[in-house]
Length: 439
Ligand SMILES: NC(=O)C1=CN([C@@H]2O[C@H](COP(=O)(O)OP(=O)(O)OC[C@H]3O[C@@H](n4cnc5c(N)ncnc54)[C@H](O)[C@@H]3O)[C@@H](O)[C@H]2O)C=CC1
Ligand SMILES: N[C@@H](CC=O)C(=O)O
Ligand code: NA
Image (cartoon, rainbow, N blue to C red; front, side, top):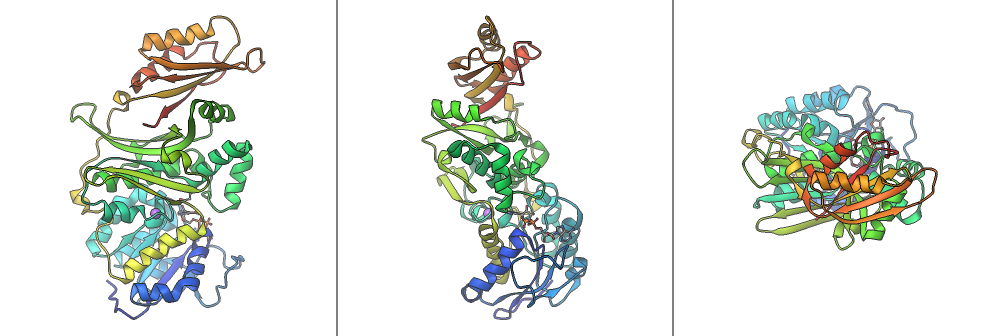
């Protein structure tokens, strides 16, 4: 293990020099003096590594030693901590993490994909070595939500944690909502702004938010992290008409990640984890979280409702979280990565989502012919779904008519039954869209 002497600089190796890596260099250059006073010592980058040495990154890299082979960093005595900003669940990021933690080298990462898949194993390695594994940037970028849950809310039993966890999707949905622009056009802009993952499908299919949710859920509920248990739907199938209908009904559409303890210990009990587009009532704070902002709500039994909001993506906010972790390392503030020793985490048990009670929005595109509405109404009746409101738009159009339904509160299984009853109907012109309504 590296022994740090307060006042001696904390020597950092920075691997990955893209959006976030560049931000970390700029932040340390800009706020270095203040950070040194807060950390108790200067934080100095001593070595850097990335795939392409010659690329212009808009920052002066000449003060730092370039390392071609990042695998040498774990063994270097003149490096106190390694920061990984490459990305990817497996591959070089994971190899580097294992090497560093096995070698007793503190490790800071923004890599939620790696943590969602290997977080428990990495936490065990950190625990065995008595060293820090820090990842504030991995969930909701610049928002100090890992600290908030791990430290600030640690005394509470949490009943539910949910929020907007992907800046790219939120930027797309809210820009489509405000400016009426096309999905592809806004996605390109989010990529240009540095919000999107290297493969933007990971953002828009909800996978990135699911990575983050699984990490948050483990912290919030003290359960073993289980990414595979997150039911995930992205925003690909949200159309402009859904945004308009939601607005007409008094809602905004947001991609929401939610983890909740199902109340009973019987067959339906356990942890419910889901990422999907939801209708958020206009009077809920999440409805006003726009652009690349993220927000997390946690409901604790003594603290009540906590609401964290801030920039979830982009170079500055993400660098802010990475450097906060470095300051913790300099202060020797370590502790268990998932707020308790890995052996103390409860085994994960998946709740029966079908038993969950709530309201839903269903959208159908159907043929414009007599009897279609009756067919849909019959399916809802037979499945036990009670309709609160129904809108039909676009009569006599070639691409059919749009039917939007809002249900009364009921078991989610009944909504699924409705869709099963309609499946294969030649009245439907495309797969129906279901979005649950946030309560
Ligand atoms: N961009 C953002 O707003 C946020 C990103 N993150 C996470 O931070 C990490 C970095 O993201 P970005 O900076 O946006 O990515 P980026 O794509 O802009 O930069 C990645 C960097 O890693 C290097 N790299 C990639 N593969 C490599 C390899 N095999 N060997 C050596 N170097 C390699 C690239 O050369 C580049 O310098 C990812 O885990 C991402 O999920 C987390 C929060 C926000
Ligand atoms: N691609 C991610 C980046 C931050 O985690 C996002 O859009 O939120
Ligand atoms: Na964060």
